[in-house]
Image 1 (tube, rainbow, N blue to C red):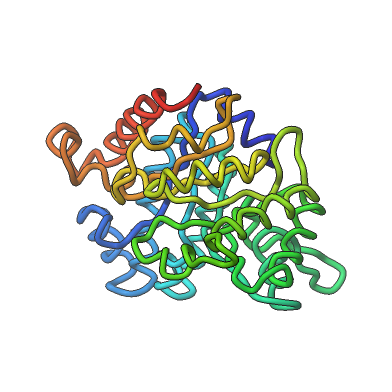
Image 2: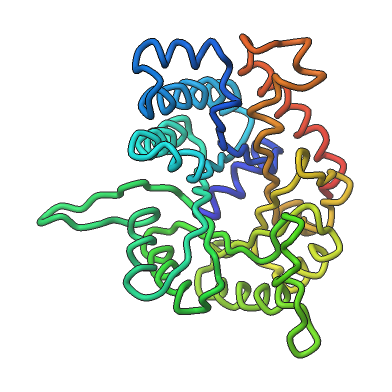
Amino acid sequence: MINRLTERIQKLEAPVVVGLDPMLSYVPESLQRAAFDAYGETLEGAAEAIWQFNKTIVDAVYDLIPAVKPQVAMYEQFGLPGMEVYRRTVAYCKEKGLIVIGDVKRGDIGSTSAAYAAGHLGKVCVGSKSYAPFDEDFITVNPYLGSDGIRPFLEVCKEEKKGIFVLVKTSNPSSGEFQDRLIDGRPLYEWVGEKVAAWGEECMGDSYSYVGAVVGATYPEMGKILRRLMPHTFILVPGYGAQGGKAADLAPYFNEDGLGAIVNSSRGIIAAYRKEPYASRFGAENFGDASRQAVLDMIEDLKCVRP
């Protein structure tokens, strides 16, 4: 799958992933009203509104980008109806030819970690049959429990030719409370980055590993160090746009081949219709067109950072 991701980025000249993180407040009122008319002001109604919102955005941008990243919490908060929409969103995006990165941040040990890996990347057996419950192409994984928590995901990645992105240096302001702590004179994120590179050696594609890393756009100097420590690791870069990360800061995340990183934007794309310059041009009724233009603008913006 990592080979397919790099091929799609090269073909589209777009190292961009759109985060499908739909808060209900992002959904235009007209869609909410239609969903509530059909299902009432219920969890089912909220889930239907989010499904229609996602579908419109995906239809508007799928030909421009290689991948999407649905954040499971935005669906999980609506219970079983929300999780069904998460599953439908993953399936619909794959039908459109998109690579799906499930932002699930799972991490545990033993059979629990194996169950997470099977449910999101692999298959589960039911009697004589097997099923791929969510069937994402990649997922995000928390490494805090160490190799015991990661190895079950590695085994499924090898079997299914899928991948993971391991949290190394996240974009949130308080990430340094733990990730920057010095251990034997070096920050924790460097130790994690080296471990990610070692895990990745077990699961190599043509040029990059199935084991990627999450490194926030808000810390470019740290990104530069981690790029050197993880030369064959694909970096998923959150924090661009709404969280303050700028295109000019992202050059260190890419390798000399122009690959090695994919940059995420979530509300900057899916809620573009709510802010200028898109609000006055498109408005809420044309939110999909606003998202498409925001993607085009992001692709253009990122041209300055790739070799």
